[in-house]
Length: 268
Image (cartoon, rainbow, N blue to C red; front, side):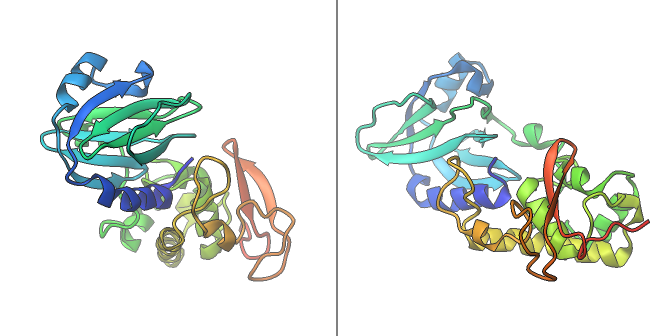
């Protein structure tokens, strides 16, 4: 699943090709892709809308239009592509937007988990999301208080989008290694100094991921280079880049989790 750096990279890449374009028509090729509104209302409302801004919130891709907003969550296998000239729909295309200047925006999604919303106010969809880890609101003080207020293991808590928005399996594992915290550490046992280190590690990991255009580890997302910088993720049995011990893997909350047993000791 594309995480915050991959969605941010996608927004930056598509922004020049989309801003200023007007949506001439829509072709919804799988109705369940659309979370809201109805297919009929979607087709009527989106026609004639100009794309004024391209951005993201957490793992959501956002198109700000003339009077509404189009939100796209790629989920496990979704992808967005801008095509110039005539376009022939392909098997896994779920939504095609015909734009001015003979341009098309295609949302493809082989596994059909992705969703699209056309809303007046994006806050309705984002209401339950936690803060952005790259925002000013994400401070060491906030993180320390939020961790202490919960009694959960760090790995599943950091994956919880209502706690902190945008992190996924890759960037949680990488951040915890950088912060020298074991994935099973109880959140209410994290000290103020450790919380500051974790906050800094999360930001540094995400910023590096964005600089590398995200991570490409499968067929879903291509073009990134962060996979070449992984410290622990997907490196089971290989040497830790800090201490040389072999990276271990365990399952936490049904998610494969990678860590260094020396750098990330689980304290009693």
